[in-house]
Image 1 (cartoon, helix red, strand yellow):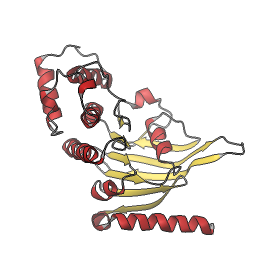
Image 2: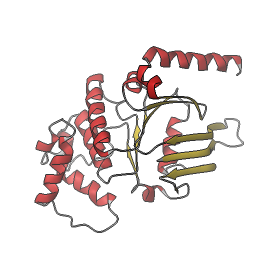
Image 3: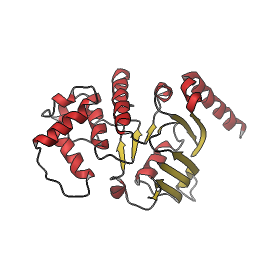
Length: 259
């Protein structure tokens, strides 16, 4: 479960270009809920993810994971509970190492206790099983250097590495934005299979309106650091891209009118 309570973050405070990025933001995701966040540039999406992960301190407010206040816990300690996949497929993996070696590094990084470091048969079997849920054939390429994988395969590997430690929360930071449409759909399919198999609480930021319609339990629209719209349940089931675009248009009209 994720709770953001009255989160506030201001950049360049007291200067002419002062910017309120999070304006007493409140947001809750239930355990196992998949929330999809949309919003225009500057709406506060990246700031919110950085605050949740611990990469950016809040000016005020709280962030709770499964009821535990993590607001002042540093990013490296939150990493045992929060996994994040970034936009760039080149991040999150070591290009010159094999698929299996990358997964071993991720496993060692996510565990609090000391582990044997070898790629033994038991580990390799576990890696094959986890990779098989992607449906991309990576379970048969454990000895392949990551630099030889496609962008979609590499991003999917980053996803499996991120969730290997069974995190309390998965953050997807526009993780399909750098991919072509076909590959982006493949990665989203792999994402859904992983999220459903592990029953992960997930927050995904995207600019892809079709993905916002097709995936997740809840659509959350951010604007000026606040939640302006939240759609879930039967309303989410029947929403269309045109509906979401119309909500953006209403928001823009209100801004022009000074509302």
